[in-house]
Image 1 (cartoon, rainbow, N blue to C red):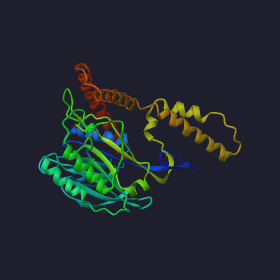
Image 2: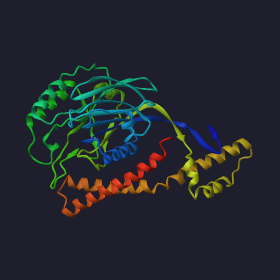
Image 3: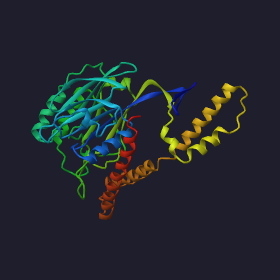
Image 4: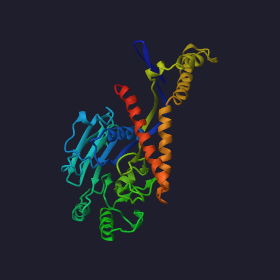
Length: 375
């Protein structure tokens, strides 16, 4: 099926493929360690673009109040609803932002440790709970947190996703050095067991936090859990890490695969027409030989051929995107080396140079997306 929407001198070309795919919801989870800086905004915006997330869960915002104009500094316009826990001075704080075009959501609980939101997909209205956690660092606060966490009353039949920075680890291997607190680990594992939670494995990294010193201390402090009901409803939920270029925590994405069908949509971008190779490519494709005799079928085949050609052509345009991915790949490689041995001074300095380069590329990408905000 093919339809054309004409808008003045330009047009948008949509094609709905006959094959349906299932929708996926992506949740970006990141301890940003303070959100009040330009480089943090650019990094968050880049992670939103990279992860294609629908919900953002940020811990340690170090900000007492949020409003939509401020959230526009680091979120695309499609993220138009939010809820937050204010920081206490410059300590703590949690922010959850989501797309109202994908979910309806409302707050069901919050305290100084966590905020819980009930979400319902606009496509099937199935409710589920997202809890974003930021655990305390001090010993007394950890005991209070553990007491609250272990005694959460959540119905067994409710789909429940718990994510965030718990500031705790489950086993000695969650640190790259000795010095683990066995008492905290025991309390944490007991609470997980009492709630009947299922851990969502993290792919791509062994640790999620670094002290950014040389040699580094690495720990697994960020965790992702689900209820038994969640596991039955969304069995293909996975978590993976992204490249870290700011903060001291690695950003992570929880990918939730659903059974909700999704159509394949192709959208013509008006900005393509400003590219010097656009018209020659279209003319070459449009004037190709086609065997259809029926006029309507002949036109349909031409549009399908043009759509395919445009997809291949536009995939080669984004040199900036390729450069960003290549830089990230090298940083990720250095991070993986660091998990097995200490980086040399040259490697350490090289990674710092790459991080500075990545920030510069993100700034260029932000300008690109700013031009497309109206879209």
